[in-house]
Length: 214
Image (cartoon, rainbow, N blue to C red; front, side, top):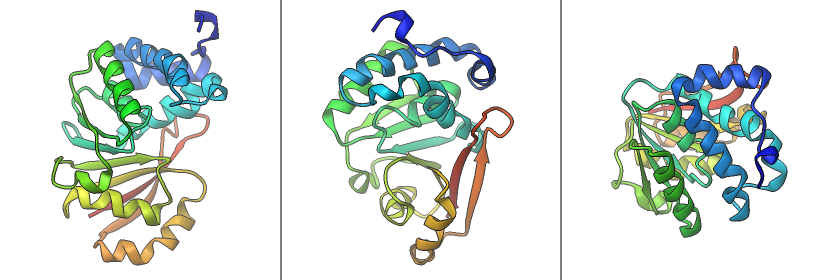
């Protein structure tokens, strides 16, 4: 893909990216370049997503960092193309990220991107989330576009082993999903369940996050 076909970062998205990534913005740009080229070639991202890689994907994920305390450990379930895991790793070098991804082709791609960007705060665990319990220590578990909340709870909350937070990136159905998952939330002993909004002052379309605190 030629340079002219890469998504352009400008206007309010550029301002948001500068605030979120700071002096690591070149790393974020390089990551987007990977998404727009090899990410599409290997089927991790659909070609129609290229023009909105910044707004709909990378910035949408990165703003979730505002809900994560300093020096925390984060397990990203079903990392796929590194959304939100790699976005958080770039924005927050203080965090320790573990990307949990079962598919080998995605793991290979993630490993190549991490090496190219020189990210030292990221590890990859090739595993189904259900099998990762006890294999990773995490203060937070993140997930985006993995499954509806009622199913997501079974593959994320056990990783926290009774203490920590799930930050699930969701859309307009967040409240409905919480209602459908109420019995399971009680089963896992969730102390708090909230719908949070990330990036309100930065993004035209802020990110909706379901926060579950154990």
